[in-house]
Length: 356
Image 1 (cartoon, rainbow, N blue to C red):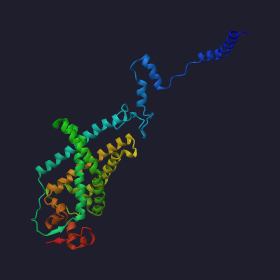
Image 2: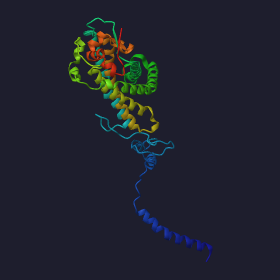
Image 3: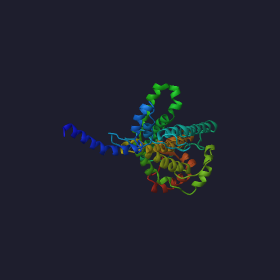
């Protein structure tokens, strides 16, 4: 048998073995294409420009390959999510943006405006609360140096945080149309850096203030009566109280302790993303941060008004640490009586005393 005949025989045997398997494979339906990349390759031929499979993968929220390490480094776009009052047709980032720039900004902005209008109406309508009796010239120590340092470090850092936060939140709606893009970009960038760098100072000062002032802000007998009639102060009606009245105590616990601590903690979560917080976590913290900070700013506006131009003689108390006997008797009569009797001097860390 020639070599050609042997080769032909081997080819015949190979075809006889391979063809049945090939025929069987042809008889089976082709497996469905699972890979979006494979679908995309085919679509480039059948439907040029149709990138639907790739974008379905992108919007799925499932991590894909990336050479950069990180919890969400492989997720290009967040999956769909829902914020209060919205449907679930937007991605989480877009839903957060709509909620922040929608209800949070609108209602928060109107809250600040309403408080400012009310305070202006009180000042121009009723005027500041004046002392009924002339100052005696005899001074009582109202705040110690430590208490004043804690207050002013917290107050100044808070005012910086509030001002820069308002620029960041409302600036593009209020300032941008007035000052233009160039100045607004500069102002917003400055506000961002001030907000971030002053934040830790505010947090430390806040903790010190809470520790120092907590004791004198504990609930006491008569606080409920004061709260029910606190508005009468605006028309000059005397309401006896201890070192801090019930309104100041509400401001301390609800505002300084609760709202400020919430703002500080959520701010730290956003300020230090190196702990690999998820984007969803950062967005949620941002909403909680603003929802706590804006009411706190509204409360602080009232506190600042009362402590400066709203009540005659109030500002000097925290500036100098002392107050006149007439002021103490008219606004904090119970505390004044304790100081006169020597009870507070023996118990209070502020060690109030009469100065001539």
